[in-house]
Length: 199
Image (cartoon, rainbow, N blue to C red; front, side):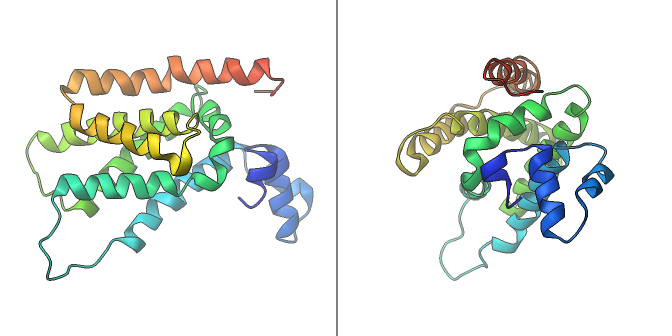
């Protein structure tokens, strides 16, 4: 991941990382998913890192589940700041048909992890609707963040707050997940191709 800020989510970054680890350049071929391997590594590593930074309980009044969901979602978003200028490349790779299943699965795992760490103990059908809603909210906020030029991504934080406050209806949320994986993803791919990126 050290070479992603400079080279993006590309085989060049993958090869450079292998070289840093003392392996031959050709060893990058051991990753059949190519540059997507970098994307998936980042997604998994940052999801697992959330559990390491959850604040311990204190004598103060505990935060609500929604407040915890907001805090953890922001924590995950902020973890991507060092490579946010490259993240549209990652979104384009995730939107490729062969990578969509893994990408959606990781998005679902992230949503589940956030709710678990936030203290959500629901066991009814809301277990599913909450996670579907957060998946859609996270995906749209992450996409917004790639275009946010405000100081400290203040507009991204405000966007997230609006989405959390205005989330209504499972159908709307599930529809947004579909658009994230489809229309928006293809738009990113076409935009990058117009700039000469080979995808």
